[in-house]
Image 1 (cartoon, rainbow, N blue to C red):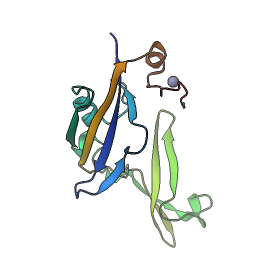
Image 2: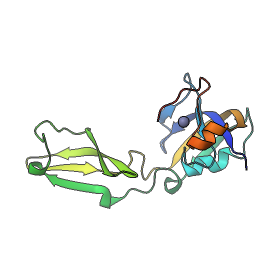
Image 3: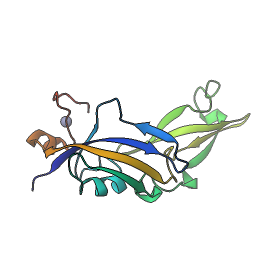
Amino acid sequence: MSKQVMSFHYTLTNSSGESMDTSQGKEPLMFLVGEGGIIPGLEKVLVKMKTGERKKVVVPAVEAYGEFDETLIHQAPRSEVPGSDKVKVGDTFSGGHEKNTSVFTVTKVDETHITLDGNHSLAGQELTFYVEIVEVREATAEELQHGHAHSPGGHHHH
Ligand code: ZN
């Protein structure tokens, strides 16, 4: 079965209506349908839309970046963290296994411990997207093989 590549512009706002991110003024975001390139709650709405159509899409946390998970918060003794003298709030580390890596953000540093939070910064938040479909086209054979969309110039990152 053929698959489609969709590109769209979006503006993301949080539940307080503050703009968190936008593609306006940049290239639209592209994704290969059905490959998990974008959050599931957004994809299921976009796939029913047509070129030029605009919509407000409200995505609950569970279909966006997940509920906030307390178990992803770790307190590491300073002695176990290499270079702990230089670690500061806001620093990030990658952790986990090859196929399931997560990014841990330092949320607290005190005399004895460093607190790491593996939740996505948008976890637990309901997200509101204002979207506009820019293009819908058939995926190329190469895109299907790679499992992701390629930009018009054909170059891409892996
Ligand atoms: Zn590729």
